[in-house]
Amino acid sequence: MKRYVAILLTGIITCTLSGCGSVSYPDMTKDAVALKMGEFVDPKDHDARYGTIEYEGRTYIGYGTLAKTFAQEDIDQCVGYIVMDENSASATDPNDKSRRVYTFVGDTNHDYLMDRDISTTLMNQPYVWRAIDTQGTDAPTFDYIESLEYAYWN
Image (cartoon, one colour):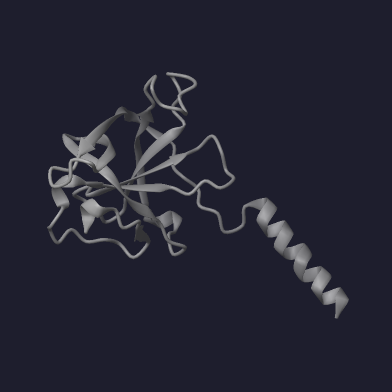
C-alpha cells in the first residue's frame, strides 16, 4: 500500500512541477495597446470607487475571477497591457508590460476582459473586468467567470 501511495504522490508532484493542467496564455499581438488605470465613482453611491481600464472606447471595472472550469480554449488573444501609474503601489518600472489583458472566445462584443500578471506564477489568479455599459443588460456571463459580487453589479 505504501508503494502505491508513493507512486501516486510522485505522479502528483511531477504533474504539478511540469505545469500539467496549466493554461498557456498567448503572446501580445503587434497591435497591443497600453491600457491606463483610472477611477470610476458609482453615480448611485459616491463612496463606491472602482479602478478602471479603457479599451476600444469602453470603460471596464472589476467584475470577478475565473472558475476552475476555465480552459486555454476560452482565451481569444492578448490585446494589450495595463500601465501602472506612479501612484500605484506596484509600480516599479513604467515600461513594465507584464500585466497582460486578454479577450475571450465567444465574447464578440468584448463585454469582458481578463488581466493576468505574467511575471509571476505562484498565487496568480487572473482578474476579470466588465464593461460598465453592460450594467442592467442581458450581457451573457460565461460559466468560467465567477462574480466577486461588487455592489455596482448587483
